[in-house]
Length: 252
Image (tube, rainbow, N blue to C red; front, side, top):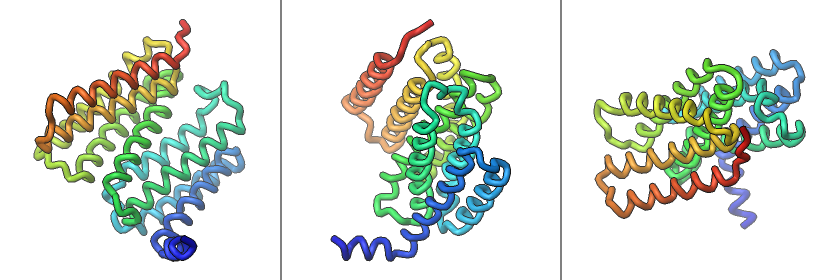
C-alpha cells in the first residue's frame, strides 16, 4: 500500500495536479479572507493562466476550468447576499475545501490523471453546474436579473463541453441543444423565483434537472433508451425533487 502511494505521488502528473490545486486554493482562500483582494485576484488569475497553459488536454475542460474560477471569485464577493445565515468560518472552510476538490478534478482531467476520465468528468460536470446555479442563479434570485446572463452562458457552454467530451455525436445540433439547455436552465430559475424554497435548494433542484436531462439526451442519441430506463430517470428526478422540496423552508 505504501509503495503504491509512493508511486502515485511520485508521478509527475499527479504531483503537478495536486500542487496546482493547492496553490490556487491557497490564493483563493486568502482572497476569501479579504486580504489584499485586488492583488490576490490578479495573482490567482495569473496562476490559473499558467496552469491552464500547461494542461495537455485543456480544450476538453476549458469551460469547466474558467467557470469554476469565475464562479468562485464572484461568489466570494457576494456570499453575504445569500449565505448570511451561515457563520463566516463555516463558509470559508466550505469555499476552500470545495474549490480544492473541484479544481483538482478539473486539472486532473485536463492532465489525463484519471483512468476513468468520462466517469470523473461526469461528476465534475454536475459539480460545476451546481456551482454555477448556486452562484449565478443565487445572485439572480437575490440581487439582479443581470446574473441570468452568466447563468445562461455557463450552462450552455458547459453542456456543449459535455457533449464534446463524451464524444456524443450530435451533428449540427450540439450548439442548438446547448443554447436550448441554457434557456431552459434560466427559465427554471425564473419559475423557481416564485417558490420560497431558498437559493441552495433551488441550485440542487436545477442541478438534478440538468443531470436528468443530459442522461435522457445521451441515452436517446446513443440509441439505448427504453421505456424502463426513461421511467427510471424520471422516477429518480421526481424522488429527488420531492426530497428537495420537503427539506425546504416554505416561507412567504
